[in-house]
Length: 336
Ligand code: KG4
Ligand code: ZN
Image 1 (spheres, rainbow, N blue to C red):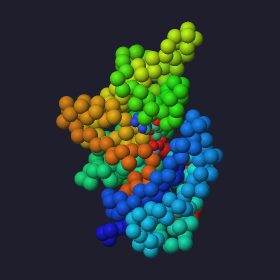
Image 2 (cartoon, rainbow, N blue to C red):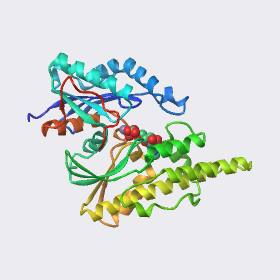
Image 3 (cartoon, rainbow, N blue to C red):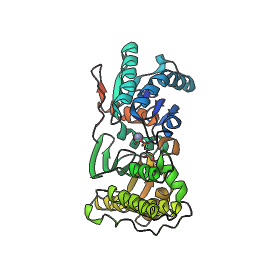
Image 4 (cartoon, rainbow, N blue to C red):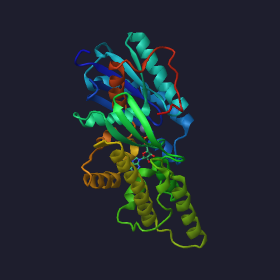
């Protein structure tokens, strides 16, 4: 493979329209993210139809800006990568159709990328020396999983959520407390200085590497409703701190167990919840006791962005994986 292989990557799986130019899977020349958070906030969550319409409006400008910022034209691009799942069908269709059209018009190869493998690759942009094998904790709005990443394209899922994803449960707790969308950062900010001793649910010790967040979430919601019915003050800060402590504890305990039991010495965290400061400090602290090194993506690569898709696309392409053509169709429920 020639040096300086440039990928133009497109991400539109949820409510961010993003385009990036990435060189050799590791160097990001541009990463434009147009977020729709302001649009969806008033509905308390992402409205799929509204999201797809806004992707259509944004995508042309976002792609042009990414090329401009990278100092490139389409002629300088070697391949086009796009998220084809998992995600919202209407949102995925916009990115996939755009990428197919670009690939057809420019005769450049098209690479189909799994959104979650993209999140993992966000770490390759932040840590130039990082290479598999490692244990990956995926924590996003739609997924919570522990994956043994044996090689760039060899992912073995050993733990999964049995119900809600961790980001989703942060969002639901935020909603019931009236904190707004997206809930993770809001709950986390509120947790600061709160008392973390409210016991909503017990740790899920019996689930092996699997997670369950719905019991805790429901216990939090019931706790709030009971206080409201009695006309008592809802201790928002304490609820946020206790919920966050519980969720972070679950994630850390299982990931470290998975790392030790599978003979790995590196943990990589991926997905939107990797921005959580408590998760960052707690996992670092606990892993250190076992000599395990922990990697988190830089904040710009935590939540949805196209640069991570460009990195994953590169490692797929050089290994002959994910090469797509005009028959590529979005897969909303694409598994890991
Ligand atoms: O990976 P992502 O951007 O989108 C999906 O692929 O789902 O993750 C979004 C999720 C949301 O649920 C959001 O509330 C959560 O990540 N999140 C956080 C934080 N920042 C984003 N959760 C906890 N603490 C944060 N600081
Ligand atoms: Zn994501």
